[in-house]
Amino acid sequence: MNDKPYRDIPGTTVFDAERSQQGYWLNQFCMSLMRAEHRDRFKRDERAYLDEWDMTEQQKQAVLDRDMNSMISLGGNIYFLAKIGATDGLSFQQMAGSMTGMTEDEYRAMMVNGGRPIEGNRYASEWGE
Amino acid sequence: MAHISASVYTSHVPAIGAALDLGKTDEPYWQPLFAGYEPSKAWMRAHTPDVILLVFNDHATAFSLEMIPTFAIGMAPGYAVADEGWGPRPVPDVVGHPDLAAHIAESVIQQDFDLTLVNKLDVDHGLTVPLSLLFGQPDAWPCPVIPFAVNVVQYPPPSGRRCLELGKAIRRAVESYDAPLNVQIWGTGGMSHQLQGPRAGLINSEFDRAFLDDLIADPEHLAAKPHIEYLREAGSEGIELVMWLIARGAMADLAGGPAPTVEHRFYHVPASNTAVGHLVLEEARS
Image (cartoon, rainbow over all chains, first blue to last red; front, side):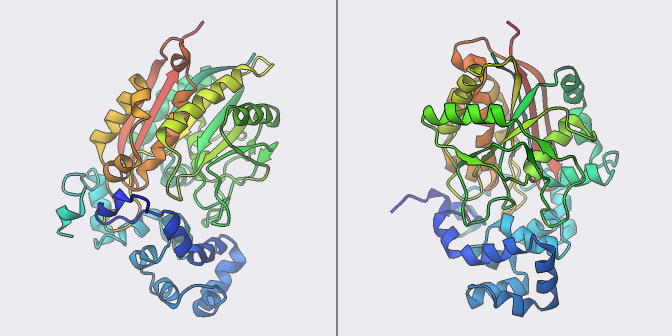
């Protein structure tokens, strides 16, 4: 077994080789949205477009729900998932903020004030996890 | 013979490109950031190289999960600007330098670094935002660029030590090229940021400033920093900083020469989700 010391970083999922295998089709679906005609087909009928991909039902539902944390936990990678955000007209800040439980304004204000501090955010134990 | 004259380091946040392209550089949010690059733009006008070897990472743009090379060098005469989902940035296409690229590829592979040779590579914000920050908005980029892509998307990226050693190999390759080219090497990405999960928005200025100090003065020590430290301290995407070590490794002091001079240093929080760092290191004139 490889050592994965990053598992105790709170609120963080590292996209390692294992995750990459889990999320292969989810991420390849996202990649397809880089072409305008695919974005159009997806927007016209999301369910039908998702059914063309060899994704798990959970992965499809997470996309339909735009549940970014769930997509990440099912093997999604943020740079691939960003294609969904672009299709929806969202900025990277809106996407990142949507995973934190904060409102868009709260998240933006936190960033302007120097971002999320490192103190108290290094170890899962500090989050009571 | 060709030589390396300077190394340049900068974050490559996509929102910076959007701010430039949409004419927002004078807005209070963005003004301090762009002001921080003005001294470097002036320096660059007086020190425009013949070629830039630009170390960056592709962000799920040219490389899908079908295949992600750890190190890839662009061999092509030119590179189109990618549509990342918002439409391509309105910036010039990139002109390559196939002859120097081929020379570097052949030399570096024979120095035990297994590069992937890429002939088609649409370049994303990782490459175009640094060019915009240093050159502004010209009709054409002022010199050819060799894209050098590093995997930092699919964990694990190459180690800091391997990146620094690769930079040293690139220096030897450039110095054995039989034409009097002035070459700059750029390292991009970082600084601290996390784009995913409930910890998104992490910024660690103390880590970033120490990284800049060590990059300047003690890169051999910095190269020993393990990945877990980047992930924990600088955020899951902060690990992009290993790419800066490739550029640093190409400087003369790591090959027994004099230390470079710091022409400019800048640090700013935030640009969107990210801490922005920037350095210009110029080789001592011989």
